[in-house]
Image (cartoon, rainbow, N blue to C red):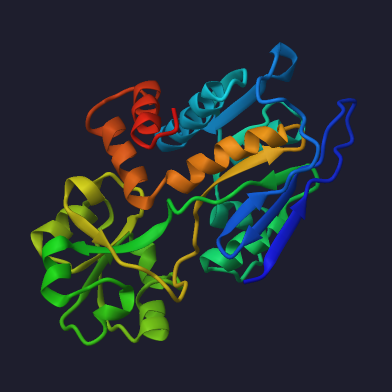
Length: 305
């Protein structure tokens, strides 16, 4: 597989910064070893400020980053619930924060609205090229937060379903989702074109998961990190042909992010799985645990504390 190298350009600011050198092989990048900006134990002047979007799942990931860095000896400041990208990106560019959890596909579309990349590897490669000077991404995680097609575990077992293509030939099939899904490129027409799957459509909107569990629809458009996937015993179908825009959790960093801290965050990314992210979200929405407690337990369970 080709290696994709991305370097941060020197930011035009009064701060002295060190360029990050990033490499990616396939769906995962790895940090090269240029001169580091920190020694592994940051002082007060080397505080890493982490931001998050105003979204519980994003805050949990940001808290995991924070505790992992603190465990490695870095000094961390939390600036969570900043808002969405229109607020987050300027905060990275002006140095207010140095690190935030992001999502590859959605971030790519933010910077390149005309992109045609959809698969995991293509999206990551395109994102590295689309980022403006002064920003870079570390390793992307296997975990995703994106559109996906789900079936009940019973339906998956009955038809031996693993990927979207396995739905071909099953009849009848009713697809449920928001009303606009009917006209989206990944809706009924996309299913037919990419995978040869024929469906009828039902606009189920907020009742989509309930309709799926009740058997009124057989396939549901659900975000891949939705807690319902675990609590309602659903199966997310694989999408090898890129019907949906791949959107993996990825750390977005500014030029002032210490290079030796990247190794800490890359270990977090490698350990965070799709199922694991769903489980973290369940702990927040169902168990009502705090991000701090969720992060502490996850790091311990994954041998990262």
